Image: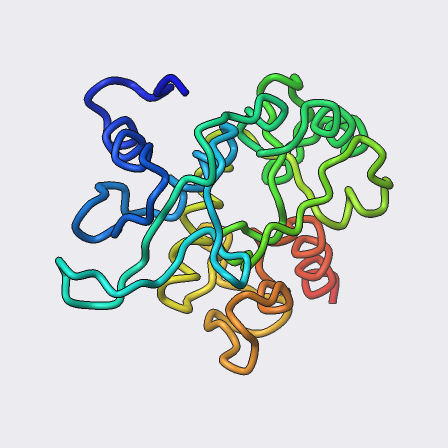
Amino acid sequence: MNNPFKKGSTSNYDLNILSDLKWHCTKCELKSGQAKTWQTWRHNGIQLDVDEKGKFYKKIFCNECQNKTVHRKLKTLEILKETKNRSGLARKLVKKIKKVLKYEEAVFLRKIESKELEVDHKFPQIRWNKNEEENNADMREEIIKRKFILLSRSNNLLKSRYCEKCFKTGKRGSFPGINYWFRGSEDWNNNIDKYDQNGCEGCFWNNPYKWRSEINKLVNK
């Protein structure tokens, strides 16, 4: 595998370290600290190994850190060409999703060109504890509408930041300037497992369409 990342970049360095196909500590061996980085790797077809529960990392005791830390490992040096795009989905499925969702950007409800839209999962991948994606072009329309939204690149990055912060702090994201959740509150429900998508219910970034519908009900009253 040729290293696809820019020479001198953090990802280039980390991929060179991981090319031995062994587990490496993210604290003292690897430079990439954000979960989004590893999602981007997978979206570009780089195959990360999983632990016994299907997570894309493994907690192992590190002799250098003298602590149990998150480790990463490549499954293979082969890059999957069919998944090499930002969404991590096969190109045929991406094309179908955009068509089913009518090329509408979910944050500002504007129809824009296909090349400017990115397919994103409503339930953020940072909360996945296993690779549960149905990645085929025969996916039914009702499943597509339930699982995906279309976002511009900038709004996709914004959603990722809110979801990462929520995962780390337990504080759910909001539409900028409007602190409203149609189910639950700003705080992640402690009775719901952090890998359960039910905890995202009520958040704008999980479902902008339902969020608008619920807030309009309050306005109309």
